[in-house]
Image 1 (cartoon, helix red, strand yellow):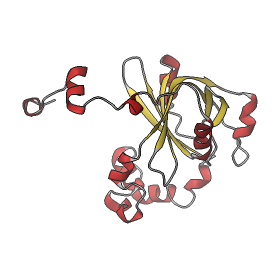
Image 2: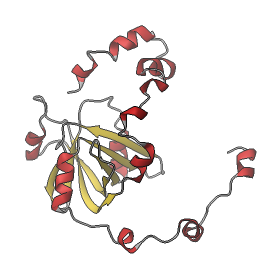
Image 3: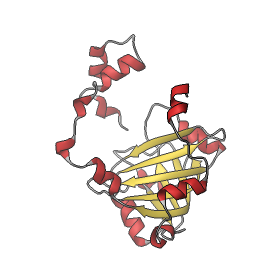
Image 4: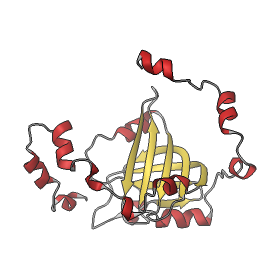
Amino acid sequence: MTDVQNATQHRITSDEELTALLGEPTEAARDKVRSELLEIDRQWIAASPFVVVSTSAPDGSCDASPKGDPAGFVQVLDDRTIAIPERKGNRRADGYRNVLLNPHVGLLFVIPGRGDTLRINGRAHLVSDAPWFDEMVVKGHRPVLALVVEVDEVFGHCAKAFMRSKLWHPETWQPGAVPSRANIVHQTDRPLDSVAELEKYYGATYSQGLY
């Protein structure tokens, strides 16, 4: 951090200072955390086609990885256990490598069009096969592995962030506000590939490699 930033920022360094600024949570907010999935949580997971998986390495470095498939892709194994399939990707496996060293994960389940979300915190491990892999087949492809999460905390999160951002309001969408994916990759990852080559790669046939 630069000297200018240090001079103009007042850092919050204690829980007491944070509470003085934000106030105490309401009783309902404080006590809403559960340790097991309810039927309504099962319904939410079954309706969600998208979840963000957050992990952290022992050194504190973090990763947040989006996972998506047809709604219902996350399997509820019991009231305290869920499983998230892994699909074809770039093979970096940053989050999975974190889990091997630090099992604690945070999950955010999203349903398109809904502002509220479902949050789950727990401890995870990786499996390369299990009988329920057969229930995770999409377009004839079984997952190569799955992230099994033992639930420690589950609770719903309100819609204020989505309301403020107007995330689901198409009239606010500006996908052209930044360059195309091909242009971004050309500038950041693959400068030796032409934009035309990358536009072709990320074009109409890109979806054929999802599974």
